[in-house]
Length: 388
Image (tube, rainbow, N blue to C red; front, side, top):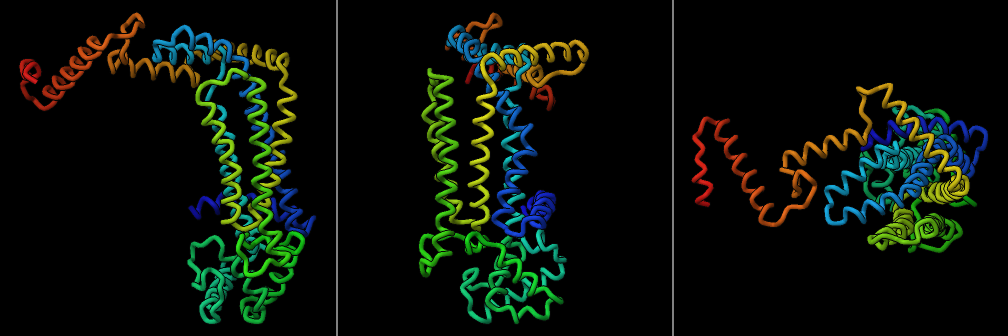
C-alpha cells in the first residue's frame, strides 16, 4: 500500500511544491492544489456528466423494455444491452472517474502526510535519520505522540510526528543535517490554518479547547457539510429529472447520506489537512456538477446523443473486426446462456416451467458426468443417474 501512495503521491508532490513556491501558506496551497486538480480532470467530469445525461435520455426506452420483458429477466438484460449497443452507450463509463478520484485521494494523503519529502524535498537518508531521532525522543522523554511508542518504518505519519516533536525540541535535531531543523521549523509556521497545525489529527476530546483544538475540530464537520451539499443536490436533481423513482431508490438515498457521515468520521481519524482538502474538493465538485447539469439541457444532449450514435455506427463500419464493450458483453452473455442451457429460457425466449427447468438441470448434470467419465476413461451409465 505504501508503494501505491509513493507512486501516486510523487506527481502531486511536485504540483504541491510548485504551488507552495508561489503561495507559501499550506492552507492556501491546498485550495489552489484542489482547484488545479479539478481543472485537470475536468474532461473526465464532463464525460461522466454527459454519460449520465444520455442515460436520462434513454430511460423511457429502458422503461418500455422493462414493461415488455418483465417476466423474462434474462431476455430483458439482453435487450437492454442491445439498446446500449445501438445507442453507442457504455454503462461502465462512469467507473473510470470514480477510480481516478480514489487514486487522487491517495496522492493527496501522501502529500499531506509527507511534507518534508514533497514540499521541502529533503533526501531519504536525512528524513530517515530525523524520524529515527524523533522515535527515540518519544520513548526516552515519554512523549504522548504516537501513543508514546516508537515509530514503525511503514507509518505514513512519521514525518508529521517528526515535525511536531521538532517544534518542541529543535535542539535535539541539530546533528541531523546542516539547516534541517531551521528549514522544518520555518515550514511548520506555514503549515497552518489560522494558527492550527494541519498535520495534527482533530479530536472532540482535546486536553484543552485551545484555539487550535477548536479549528481542527471544526474541519471534519465542515467536510461533512460540504459532502452533504453534494449529496442533497444529487438527490434533488435526480428527483427532478426522474420523478418516477425506481425501487431501490431508498438504498441510494442512504448511500448519499452515508458519505457525509463517513467524511466526518474519517476527518477525525486523519490529519486535518486531508479534511481541509475534502471541504474544497466537495465544494468545487458541486460547482462543476451544477454547471454541467445546466449545460446539458434536453435539446443539447439530444443532439449529442445523435452524434454519438452516428460516431459508433461509423466506427463499427470502418473497424468490423473490433468489438465494442457492449458487443463483447452480448457475446459473453450468449455463451453463458448456451453453457447453462438457456438460463431458464427456451430457444424462442419463453420462460421454462419449473418441471422443464428441473429436466434441463438434470440433463446438464448428466452431460457433465458423461464428459467427466470420458476424460478419465471411465464407463458412464445413465442408469446410475436414474437411480439417484
